[in-house]
Length: 523
Image (cartoon, rainbow, N blue to C red):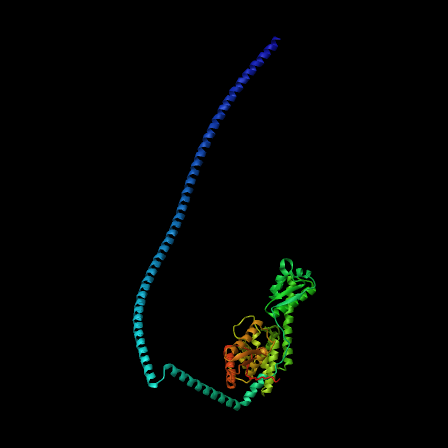
């Protein structure tokens, strides 16, 4: 038992000693650790202070650089503003100097003007004095003449006017008599003119050209296919043909709008082929349009060939034949150009045969007289169509007589051949015949009214009627106021008035009618 206690006491003592030793060792280790930690902390602080100093120096340096940069920019801005201010001040000084010079100039001009006004006033006073003196002298001379002649000024004036009227009438009648004698001497020439003006006009079918064509569809469902997705097909078609395509609410129809008839025809045929084929897309549209254009060009050449063959014209240059074919798709005042040219060619042939000239040459000139209205290139020119046609005819080796007739049919050049007036007259006949050209009804009625108003402007006219589509004017006069001799004079004066004041196709015949009726009734 004692041993157990002893062992227990020894163990307790050993534990206490061990614990004390452990505590002492732990305390020494902790002291060493603290010392090391303090040393490391001091090192870290020193490093941090060094790094802080370096960062501080960098930041100060950067701040200085930024400051210098901003200062430079600021100085640059200030310098530019100073420069602008200097320029503005310079402009202001220039303007001030200019204004001052202008003011000085205006002042000088005003002084000169005032001087001129003073001089003009002085001259005006002198002229007024001279005028009054002249009037006084004139009055005294008139009084002296009245005393000498025994007539007043009014009586002398009326006698002088009556004598002048009689002299003028006698001179006019003598002139008219000499003109009639000369006409008798040149009866053959006058007869030829009458033949030219009285040849019966050739009637042809009339075609009124316009700027739109209507393309009919089987159903409205086709419109969507023609338009395409987001309008691609219709844009491609318009771009390829140069024609405006209008798709509106019109049932089963599409409108093609273009001033060029050839383009409209190409667009119409292309649409027909596309709708018939059913394959409508941009690539197919371009292919069809090219094929159609080729077909139209071949058709134009064929039309030109048929035309020259029908008229019996030979040896025409291929380019001129193509131009003749293109006339089918041109119009002037609603009159088809090809029909007009064919008509003029036939008229020229008939007139040339009547006058003993070459009818084939006249036909040739008549067919080609409006060739300048058909463009042979895309470039637009300002040259008159008569001159342009003459140049083309010369270029392609046409006869000089034909070239002169083409260029002179609108008096653009001087007529040097007998064929030239024939072509001019036939062109006027073709355009002036009733129904040939499309006219506005209002202008036509106004022309008839103007004719009648001219007749009513003369004394003694009772009634006036414009007949024969404005080609004849019938004037009925009062028999009490107008004698037979006066009627002939009145007819001449009315015709001269119409010729001077009005513009009209062909000629206007003026007929003055005077009659006296005595009516009694037997009962």
